[in-house]
Length: 192
Figure 1: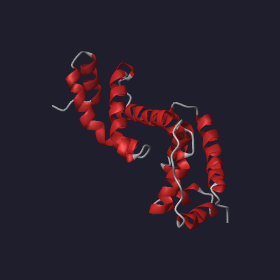
Figure 2: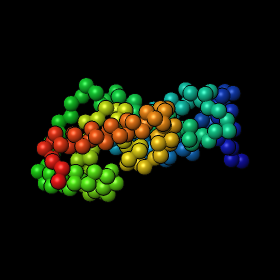
Figure 3: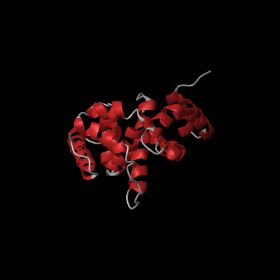
Figure 4: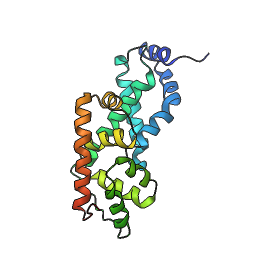
C-alpha cells in the first residue's frame, strides 16, 4: 500500500523516522532539479542533502493538506539562497572573460529583454558570461533574478518560494536587471 505524503509525515512525527526515507526517494528528483538550477553542479548533492535535513528538522511545521512538494520546494530554494549567502560573500572568484565572448556579450547587451539572455544562454559562451555576471550579485539578488527571469516564475511564486512580499520581489527584480546591465557595462561591454 502506497502511503500519501501526509501519512508518511504523520508516521515520522509519531516516531517512525525510517519512513522519512520514502519521502526522500519520492521527491529527490524534484529537489535536485530545483537545486541544480541555482548552485554549481558539483555542489548540488550537498545542497539537496541540506534540503532534506532542514525539511526533517522542520517537519512539525508542515501543515497537512498543503502539497508537500510545494513546501519542500520552498525549503530547497531557501537552501540554495543560504548556499550563496555562505559561499558567495568573502570569496573572490578569479574569472576573466574569454576574448571571443566579448562579441557574444555585446549581442546580449543589444537587447535588454531577459528573454534574449535565456535564448543566448543555450550557447556555451553565453552561459559562461551569464554565470560570471550572476556571481557578481548578492545571494538575494541572484535568487530573485534566477527565479523571475531565468525560470520565469511569477512574482507570486517567487515571493512564496523566497518568503518575501510580492512588492519586494518586484522591486528587487527591477533593480537586479539594472545591476546586471551595469555589471556588463563595467566589464567593458557597451550597449549597441
